[in-house]
Length: 195
Image 1 (tube, rainbow, N blue to C red):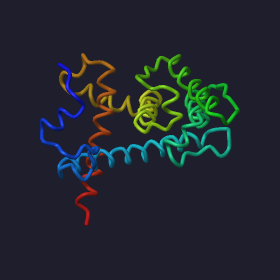
Image 2: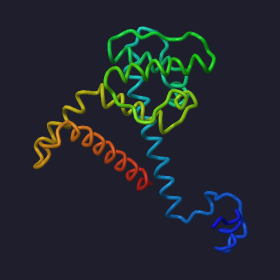
Image 3: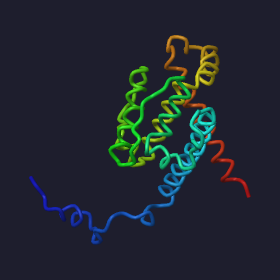
Image 4: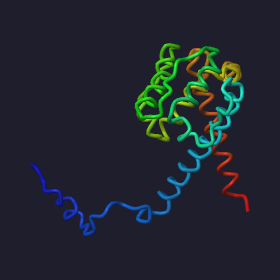
């Protein structure tokens, strides 16, 4: 049985059909949103520092990330990062139109796929549009693949725990993720209680 678009509003006594705003949320929901925003800001700052650390080694002078989401959009910084990490040279488009930007990001994504790095739901047009979640996910995937010392360190740690040997390399990735997740919460908790 099909209902009219207003049926659910009338059924539950909602007279105002305007979209839900942040002010209509209860305090607990607003706190969750605030924590998610803080977590994203911490990740953005951390990943920006990691990328800049590696871009310093780049042959192209002036490669630097100020805003992670904006500075990855043209694909040039992403290609430069991959060139530094993989010690390989990659082709790039020189134009400034959206097509050229998409092509540059696509070159970087194809390079990662050729290296055996699985990219889930990360498309070049989303990175060019500046999608924050996918940009963070892309950099996190690159960090997991190329930051071998952290994964190795966490791998030694997890091998000493009972029952983790049979999980193999997947444990290393989960351990790194868990370590960063805990670190973020410690930072957030410390900021909330600082007066």
